[in-house]
Image (cartoon, rainbow, N blue to C red):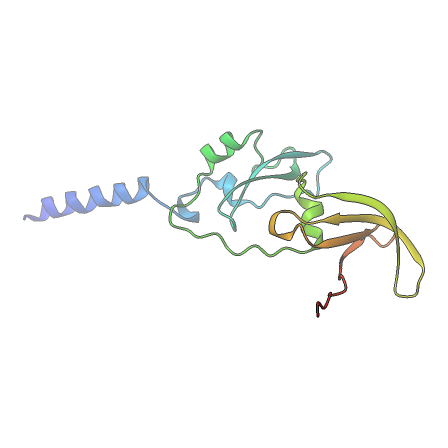
Length: 156
């Protein structure tokens, strides 16, 4: 094979690699910005690409944020998942369910005594999916949440 044929073949493979680029380098820049709720006046429930799970998820985001889409289809078209990339294990805490904007958790409002026995007004809520058996409490006054540990039952 001659020099020009080798160069032409090399150029062909380079173009193919650009077309089929995967990973952050080949992604639309809109998909690389994590969705945010800070620094804006209007927050809406929209679709955004999340790099960790490698998919589009519905969540609250600034209305003018680049990584916000009106539908899942639009999000998946602009930010398709990277093939072969496994999602990172999901780290979930009590704040995750409040920030996600999902409607799968159950909740009610009520009083819960703190460590000193003083009743605190707040919201009891559960997680979703495999976390639906966990119970959380959001304290309105302190503006924080915690998981309520249920006493373990010992069957004898």
